[in-house]
Length: 615
Ligand code: ADP
Ligand code: ZN
Image: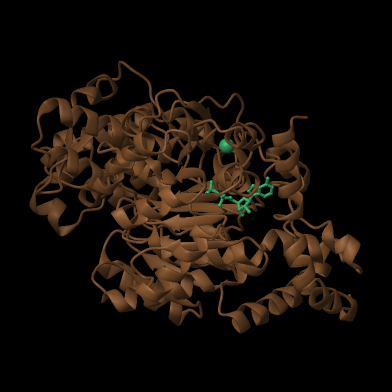
């Protein structure tokens, strides 16, 4: 083993309390310690921070971490201080006196990791400080912010290219969770990292269970998902509109959940207070528009639920990626139905954009609908969309867990399409289904639709079944929806089916979740094989109460110090503690996430709680 690697492992164990490197960390960390540049692409929760934190401790001098997420810096620095690491941050929330003190400490070589906001870094004052200091490395976090192509462009990031000219001998490490090729190329070019070694890991998040459920009574479905799967967990529920956010949060609160709203229409102070409570809470449900989420690196978000269709698969992946950063099992749950499909279809209808743009838009939206409707493995569909191949179905998504039945829907589809055609391509699902089922409603009679050939041909199917058929036909692009009248019309693609020249298979919609218990995601044995990142099994019933006691101990400590609970110990450490029940310092030191400093500080109080526990 090379010297760099050996000291890296030592720091991994003694400071962070981890036993092994995770995936590419084992290559990236020695590479940076040796003084080379790198571009690191890893999904959220992949373990990017260690890639610069360990080199920061092994190399001499101060490591400068550039991040645009100043709201996070305080907690990041606090987490490092808990490990005994000498860390500090400089951003606009730090007052002049404090800043002077930090600068003095940096100049005197008393700080190992310094987090700096990009606009601050390029000031003469900061550069002057760096000129006087020994620099271990520069870590450019959220590096996609340098790309105008991406979603979070920050002009300040462009100025970071000056680091190369000014400090050519200091290694630079750019990190991002953004996968696409164009952003990647931009990062390398804008930051002058063309010669840097590129490290790319799989973007799979094996600990996330993906589920898409057909909307029936979405609020009730959400509640039963929460009650069955996450009665005591923190998570995020995304809705499209502010109004729906407010209503859903109020409703969940009435149902006894600790739920708060978050959207751009709230006062900034209210928003911040809600966000702060969420980060510190282990139980809270944040109901939010997409305004919430950028830079939330709370590790124990156990679920992300969508009550409305996200904008794109990219957005979906980013939003669901906020679940399970700690590597423990987490859920991505979405309720999806006719209204979502109709909305997407109408968006395509009104789009006045140039044809080529419309085409790109159509490809994106149909990928999104395709994901929702797929009878195959969802993870395969997702990763496939991002250009990655997963050889076998994952075993950890709803379609893998509950087998999806397909049926020959050729005749039913023909009926559904004929009903549109014979009523003049002007009506939506409600009236069309009345016609198919032979309901002589006032409207049907007034329009004479009770006399057309399709009237009553589909009486043997329920309205719900017909809804499912129409929804899938829209998603497949056989039906278009008028943006103003909401009326359905046939597209060219519908003709072969309407004329009976092609056959069509559709998926059987599963029954709603409110009427059936969700199956367990994976058996413990399967879970073990999912990935090395998911290193532990759920704790059993007998141990749960000890886990709860340990959680309380952790909460007390967190309150005392005014820090989020996960900064004391992550759930993964508490679960191991509940399972292993260490009775002495030696065995306590063996727990994941217990380094020298935390052992010294917290072992006694947790061991005491374990010894007092009879279970
Ligand atoms: P990212 O910045 O890529 O989103 P983090 O650096 O926050 O991810 O790491 C995600 C989680 O994984 C954290 O809880 C971290 O403590 C944990 N982690 C990272 N590397 C290891 C490792 N080698 N062993 C155990 N846990 C790890
Ligand atoms: Zn799957």
